[in-house]
Length: 58
Image (cartoon, rainbow, N blue to C red):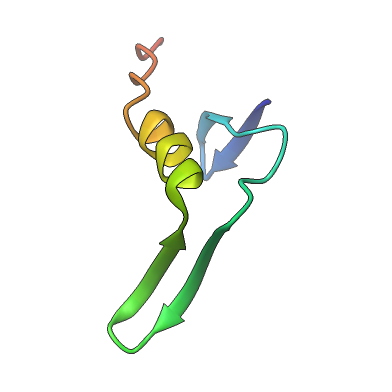
């Protein structure tokens, strides 16, 4: 799913999954934000993290 968001005068396209990742939890821990995932969720998140950024258009 691709949506557009605005931050001041800038506009960005945001790519997000159609469904939430199961068995992945982001929470506030003692040292800051912590992420707890199972093996399948780790693969999904690693693939999303490695997605190449879109070229900037003017």
